[in-house]
Length: 481
Image: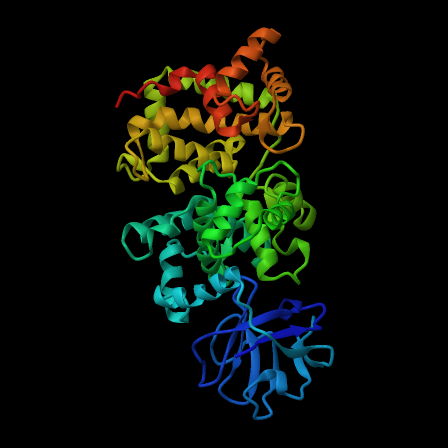
């Protein structure tokens, strides 16, 4: 079978413009196709007299566009015109819409996208009844919207129960899936609605797959890939590149010329391979890994990033909260009170979802998802290694939550090129903003202490550990339980 390119639609439902790759299984005894773009868009026969484009394989009653089948087994051979729904809700012929055959691709990443459909069938994520049952489990309070915390809780539980494979429980992938769903596939708010659920599931599978590949490329396990890792990793995937070809390809990903590629930048690169005809803002949240907030706001307005930064951040606001938190560290009764408000069901362990809910409600200054993820990961890594934060680990979590947030803010204020890696001059600026009084000799000594490999650069995680230990060593003293 060949692929089919739909093009020509402007205005409402222009999302139908895409290349549709053939699926292995038939629908209504006819061939069917799915969009290369990682979104639920299918081209199939209704079982009656139409070829339709819709967000799920069904009877085509609800669709974005259709064309009379003319008794043809290929929509590209139908005479048309295609019928589309306009802004006023009326169906009208659109003579600009065309469907033509194009060769199906053998690109590794397009094939990866195609494999998602069969996997989602395997895990019961395609049929409407299965989706309804899973949504009901996710939206347990029945308000028809779910938060990032609720989504994470669902993923953790499904993996823990053996219903989903372990590779789906990936926090970096979950963040990308959530962002893509609310910003591109959804309506731009902070919630995933029922109508966006299928898109969310597809995105979770897609970005988890990409995270697996990224980890293969990232042989140094530092969440960054250089050109050497890129070349050898692509070869292991069956995509052999000469040194010159690898360097040229790498430069297309490394848009800031820093010599390293983050996961979000890799995602943007793969998007370009899968659907090169899409506009650059196709995935506003992954156009640039380190400038994603600016890109999101430029495309969708400030409301799109309110889960990342929900209030003005200054030295004064952090200093005020830091004073309180250091006071709490010395009052075990206060810590127990705070723990009880987080551990509302009293089982003496809390999940990432419960932590996120508590931060959003109690400490909006700390409502920054990347910092939350890192603080959570550090706490469980230093604990017993499971996915839960225990009561005795609460002080370490509280310290990490505050200082990782503050360090994120300091990095954004101090890093001159926005790459979240500090040179010595940026390090001195960071210390000055934090209010630390150090001579040049002292600052140089501290910098060399952090920069253990002598590379002249401090990474975010290195500085986080240093800053937390310097600012609040009591956070690493056990909580009396």
